[in-house]
Amino acid sequence: MKAKIIILTPVYNDWKNLTKLLAQIDVIFKKDIKKKFDLIVVNDSSTEKFNHKKLKLATINKLTLISLSRNVGSQRALAIGIQHIKKTYKKNYKTIVIDSDGQDNPRGIKMMIDKSKKKPKFSIVVNRGQRKEPFWFRFFYKIYCILINLFAFKKVEFGNYCLLNSGDINKIYYKTDLHSAFPPTISINIKKILHITLDREKRFTGTSKMNFLGLVFHAFKVFSVFRYRILFSTTIYLFVCYFLFNEYKNINLFYVISTILFIFNCVNFFISYFSNKSTKDNFKNYKIKNY
Image (cartoon, rainbow, N blue to C red; front, side, top):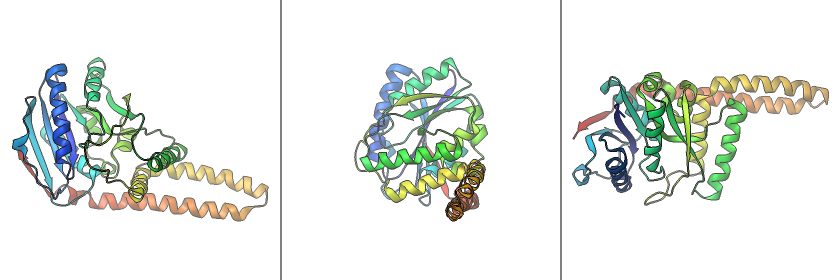
């Protein structure tokens, strides 16, 4: 692949896991890809310090550390990283986005690069196969996927793990929705997408920071990206419900459903508005160091 390869990862107190992940990536690039890459780490205001000198990696061409002054979450951290890539790299590059905790299997990098060689105009996302999370998480995640399909008419079975070409970076870097949820922003704005499937691995060390409330909040941020689709679908569903419940003289149930869907749409637009309002601040509060 002639294009420059960039790896982008957000980190919050996962430096030990990042070190293990990069060691595996280093082996893959040295033995299989035989090419160097630029590494961009977005430090999401970690409380633990990171000593970059401990990284003994032969295949890193340049390390860029973007340190945020406050914790903004992985999705906004990625948006800041994407913006930095757009400003720094002009053309002919491939960006691989990967989580730093080890749950994204690094062998997917070689698979994505091989696919990109055959179809360079396509970006590539990694669908999640079997997951290692607790049963409750998998259960509610499945419900969340069904709701997206039902209201947004989209299947979003992938997370942050992907390969984006430079043309597609240009399509999304200025989107304020990128600050709410990375995968649905890709799904809506990028047309040429290839999919591969990999099982979700366990974290190298530590426990996931995602809990039930975190999953619910993440789901609403995803719904907010699909707000116009959801507004359209709920309007159609309400028309159908009105005629159905009116026919069976159960109009009170229609009013209950209408109220729920109205609140649902209001929340989606409120989250979108809040995300748009805070976008400018996110691009001011960070420091960049190159090593």
